[in-house]
Image (cartoon, rainbow, N blue to C red; front, side, top):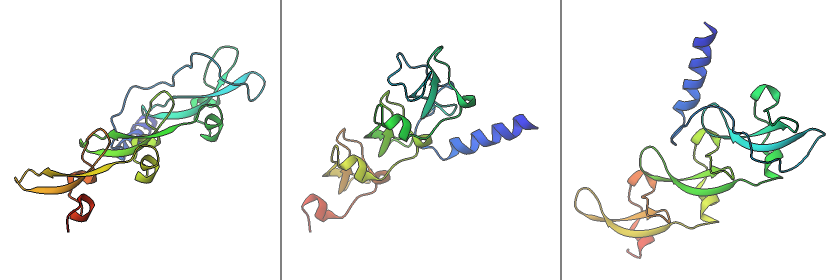
Length: 161
């Protein structure tokens, strides 16, 4: 019964994700970046759902502390800040995500507001042909991924009226 509850909880977490999931197990960092408390340090790792979290590690053997539960991100942000970048979601469209320094998507793969990525690498607008054969104004990530789930934006973004 407990295993069914745990499985249901994990399935619920994964259902809200638009980003590809990975394997389990927090990563053991290659070297301790800081010593916040005697014998421990904070670093990013891969959570059970495949996304990035902040963990506290034992200095002596590199094992994850706190029963493998993540700690508040602020602990790792002080040592190695996370970053915002555009990415391709499972549906093939471009979204803004937050990543750990090891390039693991955070927040169970949920998107973050576009202004976080726009401040670092702005998106752009361009005319493109839609599947119906007509041209529309679309928003694209710097890598050329269509945004807004492939829906066109108003023409004035592309210089139209």
